[in-house]
Amino acid sequence: MLRSTLIALSESDVARLAVTRTPLRGMSRRFVPGEGVEDLVGAIRQANAEGMSATGNYLGESVKTERAASQAASVYTGVMDQVQREALDANVSVKFSQLGQAISEEFLAETLAPILERSRRDGIFVRFDMESSAYTQRTLDAFEKLWSEGWRNIGVVLQAYLHRTAGDVARMNQLGARVRLCKGAYDEPAKIAYKEREDVAENFTALMRELIDHGNYPGIATHDERLIEATLEHVTRNGIPSDRFEFQMLFGVRRDLQRQLVDDGWNMRVYVPFGEQWYPYLMRRLAERPANLLLLIGSVVRESPLGFLWGGRDRTNRKA
Ligand code: FDA
Image (cartoon, protein in one colour):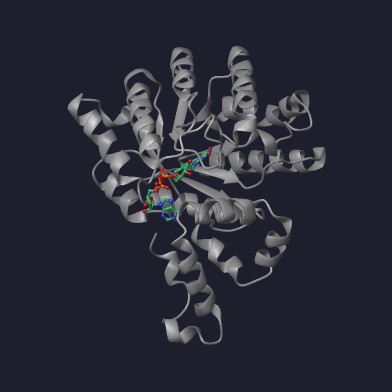
């Protein structure tokens, strides 16, 4: 109930205005390092220094004008140039709906072109994030079209909560395409998606095994300790080396677990979102863990004139 309300709020313009004009904006720093490319690059440098690779995501989706889609594409090419210049260990994650898929598939191809050129020229991998089920087939079709045109430094995301995903995993494994596996972040109907946590976890585990056994360097994207343990148990039992897959987690979430996995010798990639459009992203992170609302309220109190009662500002940034 609270989760659905928060997801609905993530799509509400009224709520967006109310939240982005209050001190709640400071809370977003917990999950988004900032609005500019330099904020992203700072977070990537930090992740690299801690032995983690990164993926940069410029926040924004469902773009309706050519101007906004082209602007998003040029932010990505700027990020890729910076990654290349500094030899950072990072790639990018983009959303088709941010790059103009709603305008037309042809326009999407135009905005993608410079991003794909750089991926080929500089060897920077490009991941296509998966959005709500309204986009699943379109995203996979667009991906397969690019694949058939010979682009190889690209990959998709598949969501374990969708009933269809076992078939999509088999298809991507057959192509040899890199997949990020996640649970799925949108509110989907029971007709097409598992709604119970246990069912999602069971499907995730089965898909994880398929991807690790038969896929191409999958990204296991979760903060769920049971699923991380299931992955470690699977690879250890089958003698699968650590360079065959990577774990992925979101910036600011379970930093303790991120560090522990790195210390234990596993590959870890941090997904770092940045940009002005942090509001819907923040609401989705709250929906995943409504206890974050308490942290959010705490951060507002700390930033208020009575903040000293809570022991100063910014403690929320340190612990995931
Ligand atoms: P779950 O939500 O059950 O969380 C397990 C535990 O992790 C919690 O008990 C808590 O300890 C911790 N945790 C989880 N979320 C937290 C939060 N927000 N704050 C603090 N602690 C938290 N989805 C999608 O639909 N399309 C996509 O392209 C992507 N891409 C993507 C990339 C990466 C790198 C990650 C990690 C996730 C995504 N997702 C996504 C989001 C994903 O689908 C899912 O919504 C979240 O990862 C939450 O699910 P978990 O597997 O972490 O488990």
